[in-house]
Image: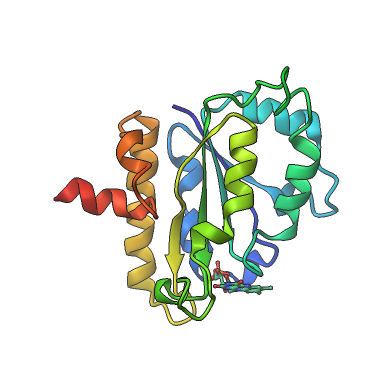
Length: 198
Ligand SMILES: Cc1cc2nc3c(=O)[nH]c(=O)nc-3n(C[C@H](O)[C@H](O)[C@H](O)COP(=O)(O)O)c2cc1C
């Protein structure tokens, strides 16, 4: 499996968590790391180039900090421009069919705050519904998110543990070792590793 990471962080120089998570990603065999803000600082997204990249990969990941319960702006612009009717969706739009899709995101809020009865009044999966449905409309296979919660007070050791999990999951995807039936039962992709250890 070939993995395409579409990375979006508008203030990468200020990043604490994603800076560590992305370090070494582009050296992983089978991973293409594509930094959208670096490529398109003026949001002048090259649609044909993006579509070519998507076609060349089997698993598409949006990696980003969660901003206002959603993605940073360039990922919305990217969806609006790149996911064209007749290419990504519609009766003739099969370019993304059966590719895996998920978000690898970081969130300031802790996991317990992302509950219906919690501080944010919604689960993370409820908030990510538009992205999941977009993937479904494009005939992709949406997976639960890989999420790093509670970033504000997070120490480097803890970030490195999450990075280790992220890289382990990526290697499992590349080696086509992810059991998609098991994955579909999870709220978070992170839980797959805990399940595997049991
Ligand atoms: C504009 C903006 C909006 C944010 N919105 C949210 C949010 O909706 N939910 C949340 O949990 N954290 C939110 N945060 C916190 C970021 O998600 C958090 O700082 C980031 O994931 C940390 O990753 P980094 O160290 O790579 O920047 C927001 C931060 C900014 C700057």
